[in-house]
Image (cartoon, rainbow, N blue to C red):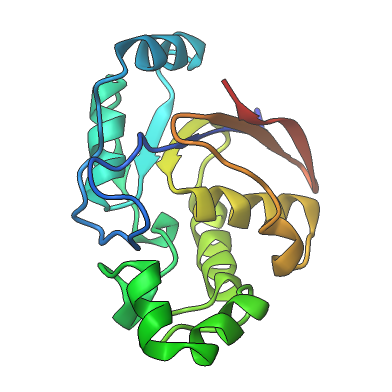
Length: 188
């Protein structure tokens, strides 16, 4: 029996909305880049189990890739609480030093009413434990992919935040019996 789980981690398409905003889960995806979708779809394994976060942009991205994805809340983006839906510039103007202090330790600080990146890692760990052996495509968020990389590489949360994860990029990692293998990060 195959005990290896091959994870195909896809960051959702760009948000179809303003830049500089901490987008809410209902923010739509920009699905217009047909070439990028076709290239990504061609790289995915046929018949793989597909999972996405419950956010609209991940569900739309999965559907555009032809995936019938199940929604799993453990793979949602970090919850920014009271800051969700707001522009970074507005929050900084309102909170000043308190907002800047959050970004001095973003891995462990929690925005008001939200969660830390370390909390997101713990949540992702729960979701990963439920995934079966075989090929699994996860259509998720940049933070979720960073969280999974932190788990696989046994990184401190603040180190995992150094990864760049672009929209519609593919990160490939394998969960082996008692170990992890990183195949590619942020691929196109």
